[in-house]
Amino acid sequence: MKNLLKFWYLSFAFLFGYLLTTGAQIKLGHINSQELFTAMPERDTAQKKLQEIARQFENTLEELEVEYNKKLDDYQKNVGTMTDLIRKTKENELQDILQRIQNFQVEAEQDLAKQRAELLKPIQEKAFNAVNEVAEENGFTYVFDMGTGAVIYASDNTEDILPLVKKKLGLE
Image (cartoon, rainbow, N blue to C red; front, side, top):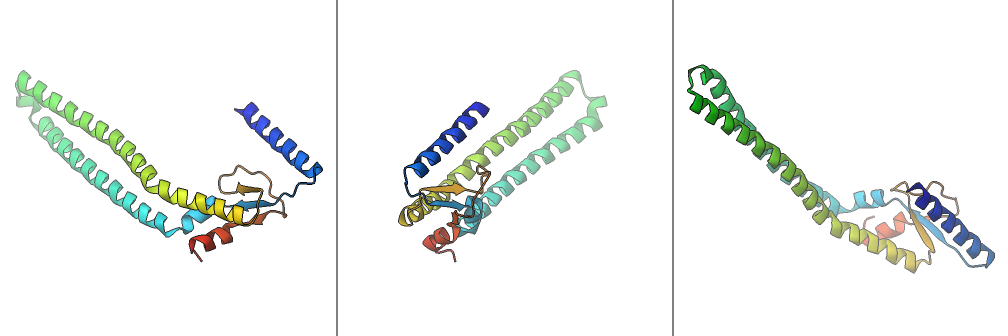
């Protein structure tokens, strides 16, 4: 992975060197995609929906835990008076509930991640499309995303296009 990253940086450096020596016009821009994404009202709506889904999962998990604790308490109070068959049945029932709780937790996390991806994808695409349109309209050769940490140096000669993209999206 490090070699691939080094190769990418070297290729990028050679490309810039070539473009500079051939007299090609380079216009660099940068944007903080996280800041843009945070400014979009659609994100807040998606976050609220995700919080509601997470709350529903938490409520269901609490119900399962209450059921387990109730049966465990009953088992502990009466274990001394149970026959082997009843004790074994109650223990199996407790194990089944624990397994259901564990399965629910795993499935809830997976479902929440899936819901997050589905809700945020159109918002990310809208932001990406706006960045592309602004870059094309303003003649940028490259636009770096400062929000991802992928750029380790940004010259004063680059232009922050976040205000232009916000304007494009109507987010003043």
